[in-house]
Length: 305
Ligand code: ADP
View 1 (cartoon, rainbow, N blue to C red):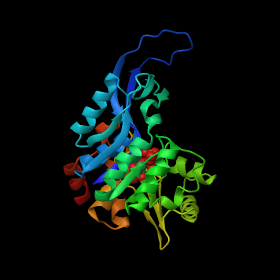
View 2: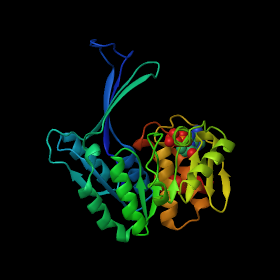
View 3: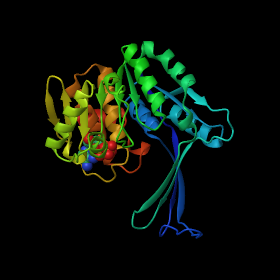
View 4: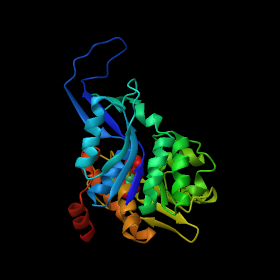
């Protein structure tokens, strides 16, 4: 299987004519709840490609929890190792999002249960590792848990794929050597290396620095421009698939799902990166986060064209 150890969120999205000012009550147009969280998104991306996928994470005891677990199961993700935090003052992870007519937004993220992932979850993860091929990590759970998860997977010989998102300028030194593949986008790569990353050349430089810090492979995602991938042996560029992009939300999560699906299937790194780019491109052609993640039929058809 592939294991995703990370965040599970519910996005509460209100559309409004304009963003409210402090103290103001404003009439909005519409409200929707959609499942999100980078961890859950990557798990759903994998399951849509029919890869056996196990989610390890944490939700609260609120009514969102059952909705989030149902969504994972309904998408084909095994959620039996998602813990329910007994502390009733802790909510499930929530993003409160307001979007106005101009597309401007305001977002409040409450980590809630995601912020309380702990040793108990590492134990659940460790029990799954003997039968796993890869572990997907992001940075929406405590960094200590990310490091402990990477360590356990590394020791078990399970490939560690780290999406260093949301962007952070500092990761623990000990994390890099535990990582088989790191997959920053332009902003995340820029934060990690301390210079602007927006071209093939700067991406290759950034990838080189990440290799020096100890990762085995570095993949820098340059959106519609493509991907730079570096290992100790070679550096190569994979162009983006030409598509009509309408919304790139979750394109990065789709990329990581496609990449890990390729690794699970036993493809070469180069071929797995092409799978990532295909999944990312397909996600960019549709609105939404999890709603835009391609299913296996769509994915296979796209790759054959
Ligand atoms: P993130 O979503 O993390 O910001 P990117 O925007 O770089 O990351 O997108 C992730 C991947 O999705 C890209 O590397 C690329 O493969 C694919 N992708 C994103 N936007 C497009 C696009 N407009 N056309 C084709 N592929 C895209």
